[in-house]
Structures are given as C-alpha cells and as structure tokens.
Image (tube, rainbow, N blue to C red; front, side, top):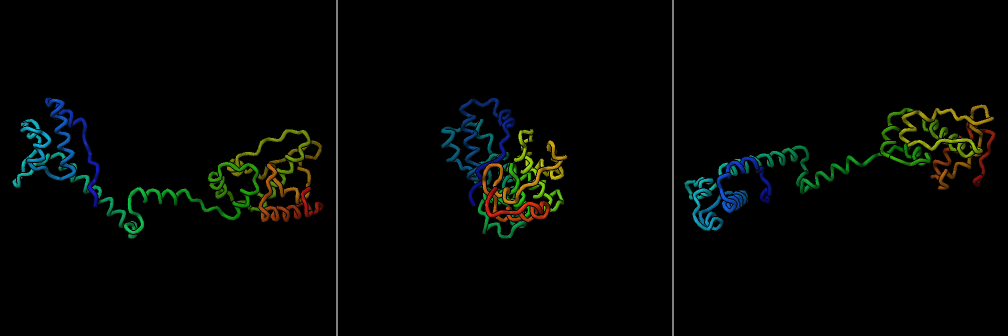
Amino acid sequence: MAKDPAVLFYTSDFISGTLTMSYEQKGKYIVLLCLQHQQGYLNYEDMMNICLTYDERIFSKFIKNDDGFYYNLRMKEESDRRKKYSDSRRDNRKNICKSHDEHMETETETINVNKDKKNKKEYTEDFDKFWTAYPNKKDKIAAFKSWKKINIPLETILTAIIKQIDWRRNANGEFRPEWKNPATWLNNGSWDDELKTGGNNGTAKSFKANSYRVNNNNRELDPKVADECDKITAKYFPSEKATNGNT
C-alpha cells in the first residue's frame, strides 16, 4: 500500500517551538520532519545531508534510538495516529461491502458511485405521462417529489391539464396566467382550479380530442399520452368526436 501522503501538522505548535530558530534552521527542520514522515526514521547521514553541519538546536528536536536512528516524537505520534485512523476507515468499508476491493479501488471511486446512486431517479410510469403532458417542463426532480406526495388518479390529472390547455387556447383576448412550475402546480392542487371564462358560466369550453396532440410549444406529444388523453376526452366530452388529423 502506498505511503499516506498527509499527516496532521499543528502550525501554532510549530511556530511556538521554533521561535528561537533562524529561518534557515526552520527550513532544515521542516524538511527533516517531512522526510521522517515518508521514511519512518532518519539515519545520521540523512540528518547531515539536510543540516550540512551538526546543529544542536535542530538535532535536539529528534530522539536517537538504540539502533542509531533519529525521530521526532510528535511526528511519530501523529503519523501512527493517522495510520490507525486510515486503517479503521478501510476496515469499516470492507465490513459494509465485502466486494469493496474488487469493485472500488479508491475512495474517490466510492464517492462517485454513491453520488450516482443518489442522483438517479426512478420515475414512475404515471409520472412520466404527467411530465410529458404538462406544458411547463421545469425542475423535474422537484416535480417528482411533489408527485409522490399526492394520491390523485392519473386520469384526474390529465383531464385537468387538457381542460387548462384548452382554456388557454380559447382565451379570446382574456387574460390567462402562465403555467406554474410543475411542482407548484402539484403542491397547490391546481388540478382543481376553477377555470373562469367570460360568457361561459365559469367553465372551460369543450374541444376536440385530437387538438391535444400538439402542445403549447407546437411539439407533438408522446402517442401513448395523446391516446390516453383522447380516451379521457371521449369520456368527459362525448359530444366531441376524435379525428385522424389535428384541428
């Protein structure tokens, strides 16, 4: 396993512990600490290669063990603590997923896989039909969250959308508000909105079923959704006959 590239370094402790050192001594000292972190221990040659001459102030920061190797006690403790923490995290991941080593080579890959799973949304068939039918397609994820909170038959939703599309098409100069954000439309229960039309006794005018096959932006709808809307239209507007072409 590759050497851990990082270790906790307490800057305030380093500053206070080197106040009486020159900048040159501080530079040599920090290089020796880094070298110890990478190697584990320093030999006399390592010390002299960095210091060039014996420097009591620098050497006093290191302990010489029985084998003649030098080490800074604080760096050793922090390196050991870091290694134990990393080993613990790795063991925890293995316990959670036995196939960790086979499928996830690095922590970065693990994070990416988890993000992909989190961002993936399994939309339901009914929601897809709603989304295809609703003219204002914004914030699909938020809309799906709102969809899951309601318990309204798809037929009711599509019927309301049909009526509201036709209400806007037959405005005849009357004011019609913009389509709401789909999540807002669902949260507000807008399928029950009263569609007031001047001279029409507060209800939307009837329309031919096939007029719904093209939405506000002149984009053809999914045939399955259009067919479903035709069935609903035939049920609620029996006087209107569906035709093969758009009206």
